[in-house]
Amino acid sequence: MTVTVRFAPSPTGRIHIGNARTALFNWLFAMNNKGRFIQRFDDTDIARSTQEYADSILYDLHWLGIFPDVTAYQSRRFEIYDAAVERLKAARVLYACYETPEELDLRRKVRRTRGLPPVYGREALTLTPEQVAEYQSDGRRPHWRFLLPNFTSDPLQPERTEVHWNDLVRGEETVDLASLSDPILMREDGTYLYTLPSVVDDIEMGVSHVIRGDDHVTNTGVQIAIFKALGAEPPVFGHHNLLTTVSGEGLSKRSGALSIESLRSDGIEPMAVASLAVLVGTSENVTAAHDLNELAGHFDPAATSKSASKFDPDELFVLNRTLMHRMSFEEARDRLIVLGISGDKAEPFWMAVRGNLDRLSDAVAWWRILSDGPQEPAEFSGEDRDFLNQAFDVLPEEPWNGTVWKDWTGKIKEATGRKGKPLFMPLRLALTGRTSGPELSDLLPLMGREGTLARRP
Ligand code: GLU
Image (cartoon, rainbow, N blue to C red):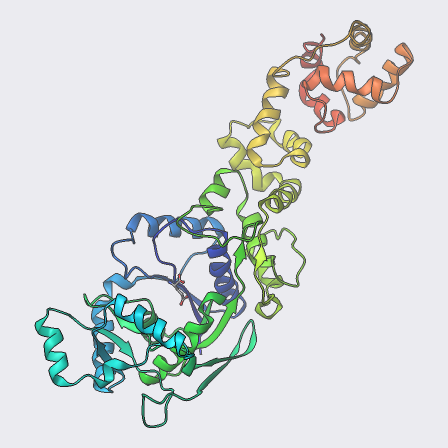
């Protein structure tokens, strides 16, 4: 059996870090099992779904390093779902219901006051042909519910009926079908809710493993019953915990919070996003993986915690700095060229500054400092100004070698008697305009003797 997974968002907004977690869990699972990855857009809600959002999701996935083997849109597959509906109707497990939302609400309240679970009481099954005819002549159209197999012979007498599965993430799981309402699969206007098209596609597309958020655990009980009603073997399921904001709120595609797009425009590297999205809320240490192959080696669905995990964007910057620190010039070269950083000095420059960058684009400010001088020249006391003048007087002649910084500061010490911070800080400020940054021993050769002297205050 070829392992086949799918990532199935509704294209109703930009994806966020929590969606990326689901996508990456599937992608890494496929990588580790030499499987296939299907990108499926659950766009049966035509009013809220757009092609622009679908395209943005594909863009974000590619940015993360996910390249689906197949891309499918549910909105183009209605005939297949219609055929499944006919089969369920023929098997008498899909039945017409005529209640309005208000009527259903009232019934739920009545059930509650009687101490009964607030599930649908299957009243539609007791309608007489006359009552149905009356509804129809009133212009009511039916919605369609799936009859959950939670009874022996009388659907009006549901009994505890456990559905079990061995969850890839959570281990043994059980859902009692008697605790649930028969799910509506099709609305009055003939449109589909998510439940049925998902099962039909999983069957049709040979999905072997469904990995998704744990907000779908209950759905799984229902969907396993639908798989069986359609004569199919259910896939293996895995439900990972969800991510929340630091204050514990759920993430939403609609709010745009922590969207992949916003993280990208903040200069976060894809591997910082991927590493945190996959490793947060697992028993693995959260470290920055260099690429998805390395991350796949740390990925174990069963190591995921069962409770929600807080996602702290500050952690992304920590991982980003690590990735910058480790990024070779080869990897950075093309991106630096785009930022206007090229030529012979680009490589030594990169090696000098990469350890000080929060994000790659921060290199631009350092490149400018080195080529044009401090952006805002520092103010010095009279004493420091005298010191600096003496220091610049003893700047070694060229050619310079790797020890020029050591040689120069040795001479300054001798000439001025200063050492430690009182020696280094005015020099750093004069040379870069900043109080911290890359090693001056690395920067000095990049400025050259002329460039250095031009920084004399
Ligand atoms: N469209 C569903 C969602 O975004 C897919 C759930 C599933 O993976 O089955 O929640």
